[in-house]
Image (cartoon, rainbow, N blue to C red; front, side, top):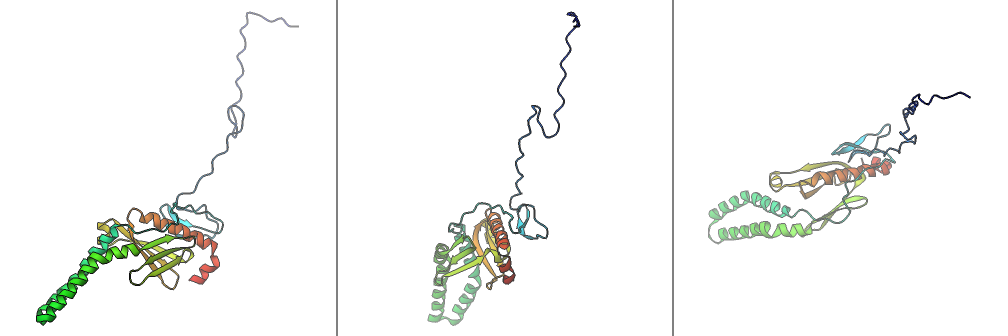
Length: 236
């Protein structure tokens, strides 16, 4: 047995080896990494041969069978147009009546007598009705809805019209805004489809909401294309 020297200092402890890749300082495996979420409005990594079906805020929307499309979160409830569309329709009607009013005034002076006054009275009645009364009636009759399979538009005062555009037939969605719409911060969505009707127009959308509605329609159209590949060939 060897004698130990009590005056010798104790040896310093040997530090543990640095943790290698795949382990923490305590020697336990690292926690699993959270999966990366795809960019909003963009599908997950496309498979070979996939092609973009439209454009969202993050870039092209690409979809194949089995891929998942994130949605902006619009529900399927029936919706009204923006109330400012009544003012837009009134201004558009007033602008549209300028030329007919000038022609009617000229005819009134040319005809003279009772016929001239009759023309002016009829014209005034039509102008008042189309500018004051008709736009609110038209607004109350306008409804649009994103159902499970299609976008539905219902409108019309004297003649009721219902347009249904299936998502898998949608080819293009454009946002349009004329001078009156820009003045009132409104926009219209022009939906071009492969159906017999060709296209449908959704007016009176708030300008700040139009890109969100367009992205929702693109996402639903992309998902529907993946679910109905055979129907898409028949639609073209």
